[in-house]
Image 1 (spheres, rainbow, N blue to C red):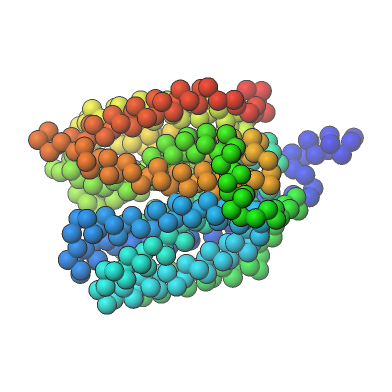
Image 2 (image 1 turned 60 degrees about the vertical axis):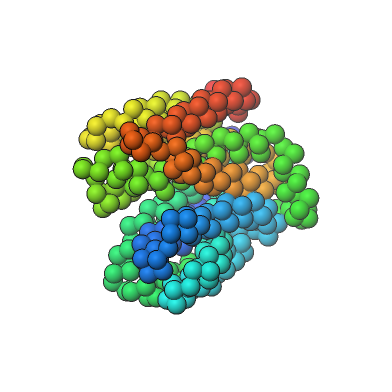
Length: 410
């Protein structure tokens, strides 16, 4: 039997043995980074009441980490191609520690300007996603990179962990103690990465200067195509994860309290996290294009259903869970699409730009929902119709793109 045949039979190149523990370590690092990135939002009431903040000030406070975390991914992804994920994971995790402690200081002395500066720096933690995508891709064969990125993408469970655990830590350890705990967790994760993570044997550093590399990435059609699609699927996930508690309490004030809204939002996030690796696996088998089309069709139809404001109950809950699942499938499909369609030395840079587009896609929809809310009818229908229209356009665009074949021949 030839070496090629043997590799096909085992489905794993001998040089890439030990790939799963490495990707799982990256996933754990990502979850810790996402937790730190979303540290302010779960305890926003502490700041709003303690500093007597206006709605505009609260919005700015919440937006600062999101924008920096999104835009910073462009450069973090490019630097990962150049320096390697082991170094970049360590740098991002350790660089997030001062930001966390600066947030702790700002909250302790009730300084809103310092909180904005600290929150902006906290966005560094959100760039961690762009480090893990090229790392995970390099550890798996091209036909299994959807699985790799799907597994790594589960690190975004850190957003749900932050929403669930941070308020409880605040009650148990106090404000400063909570931030000290997160800072310690970041340091511990950085140590684990430094001593136990290793680069894929097939990875080679790209020494091209950073700025020309990023600009060169923008010349690739795949960058713009996947950025648009990811802005819908991941941006939709971020937007709903951010806005869903307010939406549920506003639309169903007699049936859903803030605690119940938080629980429903956590279930929404978990559904998307579970669906993401499934989307990657299905994309590997059937091709990412068909999975992306199914995802977008689901988002459009379910957004329309939500826009009808059905009565609160099990069916409404299922509708939101299905929407989250559709978004998760799309996330897995998009990154499975990037790997085979991008030169290996540019996967990190392209992934960084696409990840940034996804983050930006999650920043604007809550603003649109707030601006289009109709108080007289207590309806967000216009904002949801905007998602239906944009999603339909994305569905058409995806249908026109050239897909890559999965092992199923599609």
